[in-house]
Image (cartoon, rainbow, N blue to C red; front, side):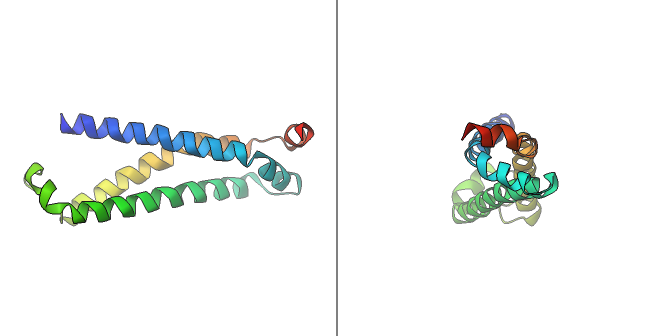
Length: 124
């Protein structure tokens, strides 16, 4: 039951991250269109958007690990056959969250690479 609630929480967080990054790509549409118009490749646009999104995910993971370390003695009663200080648990949790974050920003990154500069700049 706890695994299902954890998966649901990760899914909700992934949808929230998707919404934030999609909003940021929409707000930066003009900037991205200008970059594409002056010759930026799709790979450069994707790395710009993906880098910003994964920076947010990394900050969240670091903050979560810090909070987990602080709340270690309260959480220890819920963990069976493992300790919160176990590096395998921390690394696997961080890897799962990083994978969820990367999957959540995939669609906005692809959308950012397919911006048509003529259409975006004509609207201004």
